[in-house]
Image (tube, rainbow, N blue to C red):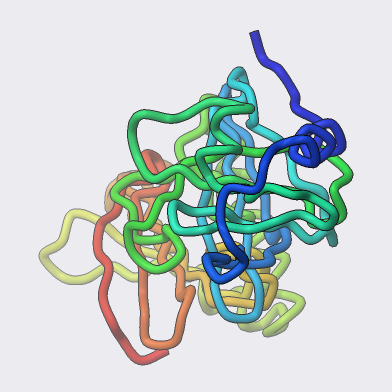
Length: 258
């Protein structure tokens, strides 16, 4: 059964606990805010970060501690090294403390989230530390506005492609859209390609515009038959991440000039 642990009760109990170590052993948590959130089935994926670091976290929504962080709210991020005291508390709070009140995931690096204002619930997540901010993982379900390989694939693709068309028109004009959608068929190849590129907000949890390139390959004899849909994102300077849209699987991750 999923149980929510209110931070007010948690801190109240901590006030009654004995002091376990001196202030010299304090290792402060990082203060982060929600940057992006996605949900797919029982999985909740959150991007937490600040001006320096960004974290890709996920949890099972049926498990205790799989909270839904609030926007514009500060959270204290606890890892295995963190040792901190909430205001007025006598004892230290560590990741193990948060796990005791929620759950402990046996696979992956656990991360605790504690509301800085002591109002709300304790959160426990798994950190995906592969790549920069998690965007070089082998398979992803979503990346900000891009949702990969969903069950309702036809409607999801239509929504995403129309989003790209709208962004191209707004950022580059209608004439640019016509040029980009023109099919390119190379001699000797059994397919043709068309591509769109525009800036979208929320890629890798970054709340600033980042370039997104979409390439669609179609059968040279039947243009309505799409053979492949590839999405490339530019989450950081000099980094290009390309994925198969149908599956979210990584095709390539390389450094290139944006």
